[in-house]
Image (cartoon, rainbow over all chains, first blue to last red; front, side, top):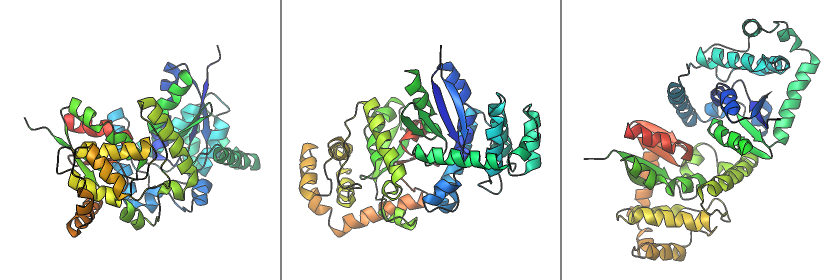
Length: 197
Length: 197
């Protein structure tokens, strides 16, 4: 009984990725679908679109809406919500560390713990000490943070970014279900249904 | 028994506005909510964000995704779907005519007929003769197209754009439910639920 696999492409700086990270495993499991976690980095992808920051900062009216939308969605789902300062957080070290953490089955919990800290409590996620604490809480060795700065970890994140771009991914969260790309927490149900059919 | 009123802000060139236009009345009615239709024009709003065309043209990877997303959504909802050429259509005359049409209770049907022609059949919507045909089909006088070019009609569309901007609207479709702004066809359920509570 092989379960179909939904690819979950997420960015630690992304507010809507937080929403998906907190519900994807339970939803997929109910539908008999497995999840593979793919942390990536939107920096180079936004740069290719001519953006040097989050579109929610570049377009303040859209940003103002996004914060209210997140408040409403988190309230409806019983999730805590706080804005990290600055936004967006530099997510590169967190993503490199997560790639290593995801070699263990404790990886998804580490990813959720980062999101809870960042968007549930409003804490920064770029600090190595903070990431070490989260690793230990998640039952993982805290030296993954050091390993995450080695050349092969840097290359692993670059590879993820290139793979994301080759899949047509332009934002986060994104989901790959078979040959189909779905973008945004709003499409998580559809992505799972596509595989569960 | 006064029903709460959901404001529906839509742009005739917008693909996702088509989706909402085709389902909003039935959904709102089931929830005991009335709908007020507000055609506007995204041109000046996009210009204020530094865009001289649809973001789906300016960011082709996002555009490619949008067309596939629309195909899937229309198939799932049993709606016909075709791409008008060029995209986006110049929607100014259609919007000015719709403002006049919406003085009658046949206005919503006129708006839906424009969307069906544009995104169901892939026809252009900037041609006065085409709009005259749609007016007649909708039981409205075809001279509304001429009236739509008079100064007060031009001013009425400008007023709608200004009001949209003052409401924090940056894209279409958008919904105003009480003091809350909801953006996108994906938020139509939430906007109605906010009023039905």
